[in-house]
Image 1: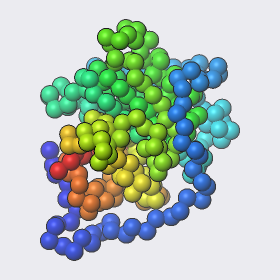
Image 2: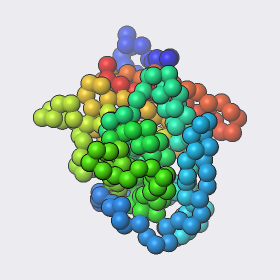
Image 3: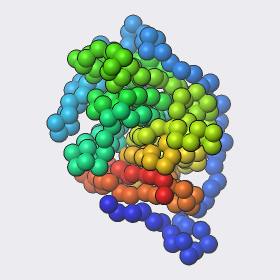
Length: 286
């Protein structure tokens, strides 16, 4: 795997992505809340699609931004809707990368605690669950996305699996949390602190979360709070650069490198011509 380094340690630390200027959010974020699995509205999903990825087949629902938010054909409305109802390419790239690492013995979810950040449809987290994770917690900016899409997707994909039982924790500890990255750690059950060494999540999964320059530092801070030390692993799928908003995988990785706490390695690069270059990266403590 290729190790990413944007600038050498011999420099003063200034690189092409060293501009830390961030814009303050125009709209205050919604309060952080836990969403219960029972909160699915009756109108949630009537249409389902099959997602075929190599030997993996998952179900995903279809709901519109008009139905849930009263918005027409919107991928993103800052402060109100962060794109969770759309199935982004990075989610599928991430599942393929995870599947490949499982096949080669580099990764195993058996008995592990997993957090999917910015989950939307939640397919990577659902995949981890089906691969034996003991706990999968899903986070999205919008509670409506969790209620109307993530929870129904999870239910549809585990409906053919064995029922929860004390001896089968795989589908017992699925929880859902809505809110901004700046405060969601206060609700999450597994957070690594000085008083809770070894706490945190064994895996953090995230796809298409690094598009906005203004949120990169907040996202990175959340990762460090939630990742289990010293063996936790982050899988991140993202475009190399998001045109029009300035974020991207390389800009986020510049924060990681400057901080010096986590190392990063390239897992996969996708150049299929359907969009700008997409990547999957793995982060771990040095």
